[in-house]
Length: 253
Image (cartoon, rainbow, N blue to C red; front, top):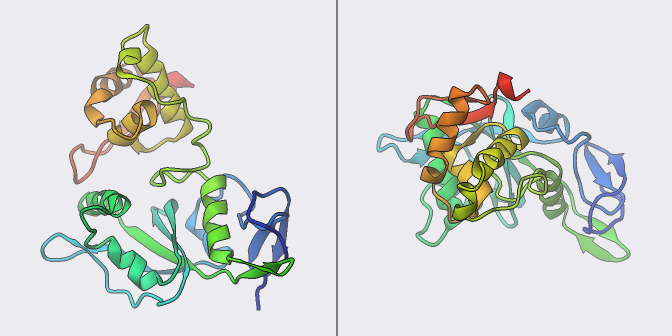
């Protein structure tokens, strides 16, 4: 049986492999490399791919998966690349069903519901993976393996749909709308965000630059100009079904 050694949830210093899971000296579970965001690497570390998100006849989010009714860590992926990692502290069945019909006050569930439905409507396949790392002990205290694994993955890797992630410290600090028009400040900050986290939508770029309350219109013109200059590359058809996503362009190299 896989097991964890001792440690605490204060941050990872040194990795030790115990069974399928990697454990930091301080107990936070993460994978080997900071770019290990691919489905195959999660599988090799103990995650199981259990199915995919679907759209029902009413175009609402759905699935036909018999989800585990126990705690664990889950991940959503597109084209084999992990986009989001979350924690089900009690039941994966209950937690993932919240994404199907989120309540009016459940902002994270609403945000993920919109993202996943948009990607599905655009023809993407959104995979669902789950992992059940065991708990362990540190000097007589119980340490949650699931909570430690989720925190470690979010801290270590670039997960575009997670609001807190590995590259958040590398992103430019949110600025004001006034700064956007000051000496090309907005343009350079948008480029910095796209370099740090390729594949973001305009809304995600706007929030990274201007904060959580930003709207995509704040970066529309800047993104279009950067595309014309070859500094960024735009992919997608545009609109809710297949929103534009941006990557560094050849001229930015």
